[in-house]
Amino acid sequence: MKKILVIEDEIDIQKILTEILTANGYDIICAGDADLGLQLARKETPDLIILDLILPVGDGLSVLKKIRLTSHTRFTPVLVLTGMDDPKYKEELYKEGIQGYLTKPYNIDSLLYEIHRVFIDETDEG
Image 1 (tube, helix red, strand yellow):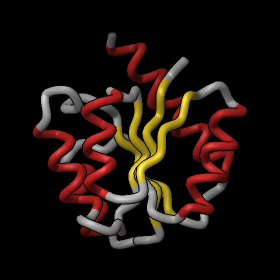
Image 2: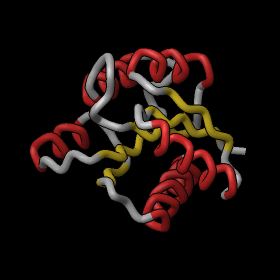
Image 3: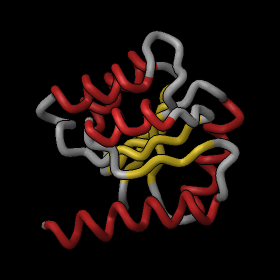
């Protein structure tokens, strides 16, 4: 079973994502802020990280950079799920190695498609 870490400060979104992704066969771990997200990323070694950009204790770009600097998570795929829709910021995130970018409100089917695409790409590379 693939493990997904959701770094999202809004409890309602955490609950919805956990419910939907668990129903689709994924093991879900949630963190409500950047520090806990980074701790869990190192400890749990998830197969995918879903990252919000606007977080308590650090923004998404700084979290992503720290994820990429840590040997345990350097190659962990990251999908951004955020309310922020800034093309320059988005470009910076892709330069840092994200695999996808979805804006809130998001379509569940689009999210599931992106997750599936990441895992298929991962299989093709491995």
